[in-house]
Amino acid sequence: MQKFLKDYVKPYSKQIAIVVIFVIIQVFFQLKILEMTKVIINKGIQNANMDFIIHSGIIMIVLTIFYGLSMVVSSYLSSYISASVTCDVREDLYRKITSFSPLDFKKFGSSTLMTRATADTTRIQIFMINFLRNALLIPIVIIALIIATATINIVLCSVLVVAFAVTMLFMVLKSRQSLELFTKVQEKLDVLNSLLKEKIEGVRSIRAFGKQKFEENKFAKLNEEYNEKSLTAAYKLYYLTPFALIIMNLSVLVIYYLGAVELEARMINIADLILFSQYVTYFISCLAIVPFIVTTLPKTLVSTERLEEVIYFNETVKNTPSDELVKESSTSNLIEFKNVIFGYDGAKDVIADINLTAKAETTTAFIGPTGSGKSTITFLLDRLYDPTFGEILYNGVNIKNMDIHELRDKISYCSQKTMVLNDTVYNNIAMNNKELSKEDAMKFSNLTLFSEVFDKLPNGLDSIMAQGGMNVSGGQKQRLSLARTIAKDAEIYVFDDCFSALDAKTEKIVRSNIKEYLKGKTVFMVAQKINTILDADNIIVLDKGRIVQQGTHDELLESCTLYQEMYATQSYLTKGEE
Image 1 (cartoon, one colour):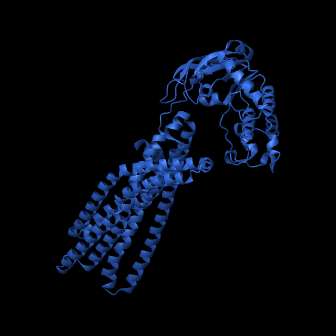
Image 2: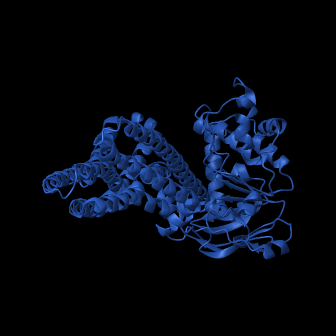
Image 3: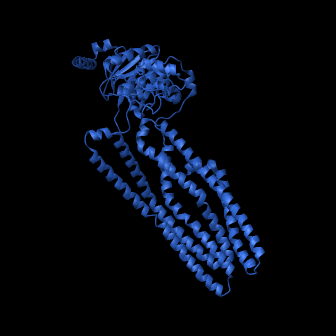
């Protein structure tokens, strides 16, 4: 919590100090206005001095104007600080999330990250603005009113102090008890959001299998559990306001009773008693803010802790570049894997003993059964993960010693899972190359045959793609992704099983176009179909995370049993389709 305050609240300490000053000014003017009531009674009403009353009234109006202006300034600055702090938190949160490796991302999950970036940050903003606008008033008002009431009558002042102390003690105890409950409520909200996201994304499958009622009941049950936990946590705090008002109003009765006794004994005059009662009223109106602050404080502390977990998370893939090593490297684009071992969190080694060399201006392909570690190798090259053991060298330099952004700038990656933005066709293609002209975008679209798709759309390159590519087929999305990949001017190109949704004829044309365009580039290809990688310079056959054999297509057909089996199976299936 201290680090969070230092990083996000401390930079606005000057503005906060100004808010405090204007709150003090606000309280000062309010007390002066109340004191004018006593002056008017003693000097104006008792002496029937109308001129004095009018003059004092004008002074009260002026004081009220200054009081209002100070309130406006403090409110404006409070809004500015709370909005700025929240903006800074969201920016750092977004920056941190986008720097996560897939392994880090999975530790949290998309639902909880979304909740933290929205609900938790909003809760902090609401608390801060109320704290700066209202809660700062409380200590200043308490100190000022205790001093002011003590100068009037020490006995009546002691009643006020005792009532306030009892109220605050009760509130603090209940607030501490509710912290654990609100932590569980936020955790349950994460699960609820995760389930809702799952149902929305899988709505087609749910309908196809007729599981609507089952999923509705499942969601209703979890929603009811969340509701029960929320109510349990709320019951701990939401009776604080009536409790505080009961205690303070009882103290008012005691003050009036003792005031009447002292008034009868001529130990206090009527003007002082009226002023004291006004002080008490002002005190109670400010104290009414306390239950709101107390009820929101546990929620805010929980939200802050949740944000700290993400913002200060120790990433598994760290950017620790060594400029000296990078400068010494050549520019031959040589990639080497040396004794590389890697296993996902909680899993055994997914790949092991990976030793390979990908020379510049060559195509290296990976093939093997599902789960053999083909895509994992490309993830390691792009530093989405780091090896558990061994090293990956780029031009003789361990990629861990390179700036991660510089490394990824050298690589253009085409993923298995195609991402389509809810934006124009042009912006989707130019995502990795902001300087791409529309003429070049058209050229790359022609190379991947994606131009056949948007030619049918109303505005060509300026047509809007639906989010997730819902307005195009799977093969068309892959062609868009391929166009985006080759549109980036990179040194290394990685194609991770991204021809799988294309029919044989289209695939052959697109692969031929891409091969011709990428002459002189270092290319990595992951594929399930041998036809996709026939002309690769080096084909690496993987099985159970290990290299079985490597060589050209003809070499593997002669010497690799697994490759022969895959080729025979795929040839048989192809003939069967024909």
